Image 1: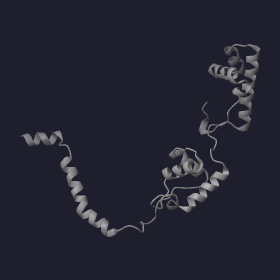
Image 2 (image 1 turned 90 degrees about the vertical axis):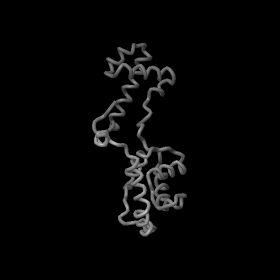
Image 3 (image 1 turned 30 degrees about the horizontal axis):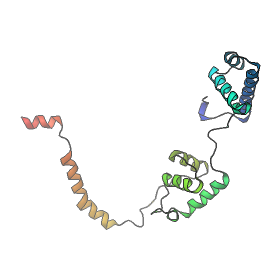
Image 4 (image 1 turned 120 degrees about the vertical axis):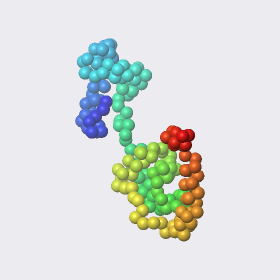
Length: 179
């Protein structure tokens, strides 16, 4: 079921859904058909089929809700530890520079807690706990301006020239050259 504005059910809404599932269990025990149950409880017949299958396999406990699929996978203690580790910096954790990227934080979470997040899930976790993305306001201390200038003067013209010579000839150029 989809909910407006990406929200879910309130606690009262979840409790009402649980009551509907338990009413379905009573109907299963009474031998009612899926169509009758779905009409009486005003739910989709497929949901009733799924609940019946779970009820046959696991009893009443199989029909109960498993909870929100979006619940956090890290406890508050683990979040606190992650924040301490992030404050230590990437160098301490084996990366060569001082940049925390989402991919690195994702890897760190996996190493520390044996929990897998996506890069997007990592960002949502950090944002939920008050972290924000940051961009360097100035150039890196390690930057070698002389090496950059040499690269611009010597290497870049060769790279640019090789790209131009490798570019495909357009059909309009070919027509002009053939005349």
